[in-house]
Length: 99
Length: 232
Image (cartoon, rainbow over all chains, first blue to last red):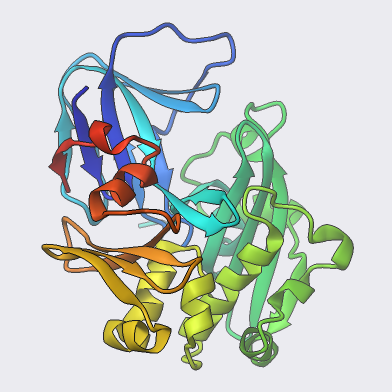
C-alpha cells in the first residue's frame, strides 16, 4: 500500500472500509498535535475519524496535509490510516513520539 | 483587531492568564486527563483536568467557542484554577535535583498511565533546564521522551560530546542517518528531518539491527512493509 511520511506521521492508503459503532469524527482534522511546539499535522479537507484506536482519513478528492514546519503533502483521493511514530522507553514499553 | 485564542483546547487556561504554555498533553483516547505546565512572570503553573469525547462530558466541547476573545476566555477558565504554583527559583532547584515529581502529592503520581508521571516529570525537568539555561547532563538526554526537547538538549550538549561521553558506537551510518548503540539498553536512531536541517535522536529497542529496521519499527511495521514514496 502506498505510504506517505510527514515528520512523525506515516499515512498509508488502505482499502475503503466501514466504521464501527464506536467511530468518532474528528472535527478539527488534526492528525497529531505537538505538546511542546504547539504545531500540528492537519488535513485541509475530507473527513477524519477515530475508530477503536485507529485514525482513518477519508478523502473524496486530492487533499493537502499541512504542518507549520514540514512541507505539504497532497494525498490522492482514497482512504488512509494514520500511523503515529513511536519511541522505545525501555522495559518493553513504548510511547507515541511527541514534539 | 481583537486577539483570539488559536491554541489547542485546554491550553486556553494559560492563554487567558497571559502565561506561556510549556507543555500540554492529554492522556487517554475517548476520555481522560490533561496536564498543562505554563510559565508566568514569576511562577510556573501546573493545571490538570479531565476531558471527554462529547459536549455532554467535556466543558471545552460544550462551550463550542473555537476562537474566543481574551475576555471570553477569562470567564471560561474561572473553573480551572491552577493545581500548583511554583516560584521560578524553586522550579530551577527541582529541575536541578530532578525532583519535579514532588509537585504532585504522592497519591496522585500513579496517574497519566500512558507514560507515567515519572516520565512527565523527567520531561519537565529537561524543559526547565533548557528554559532556565541550567546545565544539561547525559541523563537529561537519555531520560527525555519529547522529541523537540531532546533535540534542543542535544543541540546544547553537542552530538559529538554525546557520542564520546556515552561511549556509544555507530552500528550503521546510512547517508545522514545512523544507528547508535550506547549500552545494552540504549540504542538510538540518529535522523535528519526531511524538511528542516534539524536532527533527531529516536530511541529504539536494543535488538534493532539497522537504520531501516529502526524506522519501520518506529511505525509498528515490518522492515519489508516500510517504504514511503514521499517524505517531508
